[in-house]
Image (cartoon, rainbow, N blue to C red; front, top):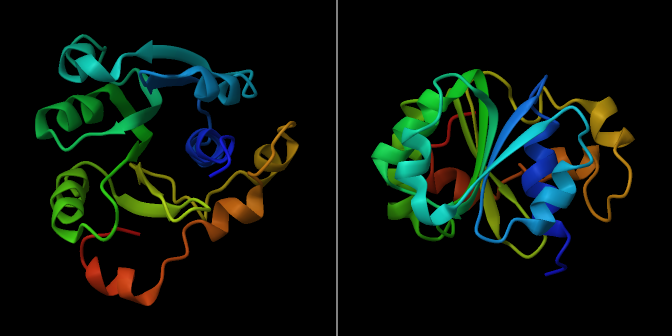
Amino acid sequence: MKTFIYPEMMVHTALCTHKLPNNVILVSNDSRSLQDELSRHKTSAVTLMSANTLLEGFRDTVDNSADVVLLDTVCNDAAVLAHINRTLKEDGVLVMQHPHLDDVASNTTLMEILGNYFIIVMPYHLEDGTTLLLCSKKYHPTADVILQRSDLIEGHHYYNCDIHIAAFAMPQYVRKNYLGVVKN
């Protein structure tokens, strides 16, 4: 996979879904490419956190302090996800890695936990078949995409408003596997 696709799709899908993504928490052990993409959003303040210390890191965050959390790792720890929920504002957005969609059991468990906190829990595709998971307390990633923001950010190699919307299209077998679990 081209190295620019993952960071563009993780960052811009979240920040072009949220109306005012001013405070972003980036959780990663290799955040350079993600930070580069975040720097294209001039109004966003970014807090970095290590993926190795998720529970400790989120325990210390202030309630309702983040608009967006970008989780550059798989996390199915219910305690960590509860702290992320507490940290996010009432219209917060979370984008995270998750097990491959063929791992229905692991994803179902994860999506059910996330469904306790978010009204929208939707996987989305990257070019190589990898998927990320977008969870939102308010904004729908295809209905509420900020078209002007998504098209005016310069320097993309992959991301644009059409890719943003198309990434959420799922094959019928995926829809069937996750019926009642994916919240859209």
